[in-house]
Image 1 (cartoon, helix red, strand yellow):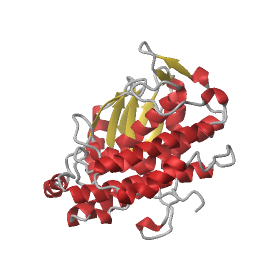
Image 2: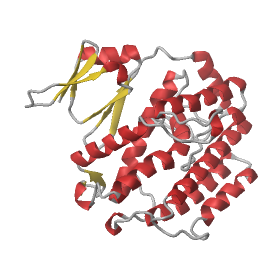
Image 3: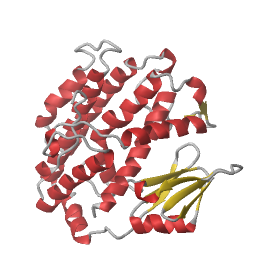
Length: 329
């Protein structure tokens, strides 16, 4: 496939296909390249100049790298951000807010699918206990402990909501994913993570310095902080609906030499289109951002990161407002 730029439009031409598709460049928020698609130099330059991120993946969804502009780098803001990573009180408040929103969104997703399976109080006890215990946390490690307990209970419940018996899974598995459902979750989290990195850079923040996730080589820790409360309402919900609608089955996956389970290329394309459709639609949420409106994914993310900027500028983590999902709004 060849992708280029001409007269304000992105041009797409598949090998062996005489027809050329065109998309207005102004409507493009990012480009994800899987496999060996060829992008013209002119398109790459236009993307860099316009702040459109290009992200490169292997055929099986492994992330290679990305292009981005340095225009939005704000050294003064990043300096404050880095100093705050050593502020225990700031990091504890930030982490507690992130994990509280994540657990609330996890519970909201499970309740939104209550018609598919019956969950008892015992099933969600781990989630509710962690949520109730957060205000007792004295360190970030304690917060992470509560998050881990909640996640274990959550994924056990989530599997019960999967309708096709052959697509159910036994807990979260990563590196490698051991079943089709976990393969799709990992793929979706990767897409979300890379979108968030681009948004972080657009706001002049540093993606590698965070307040909950620890500093680690090659890990955009702030992106990991930001995506936590978005996992359930975006990725988990999309994958669950994709599976339960019969859009995918065991034959759409294959193991690699190491025994990991990955999507076939066509399955990956279909799931990517599903993520794209959902991310450009409005998203319902509580009045955490000052109103009751529904926004597209990028606008919501900008508001979320705007609150992160305010928290960093003021040195007050209580100003950070994670995404809180209301499936009934």
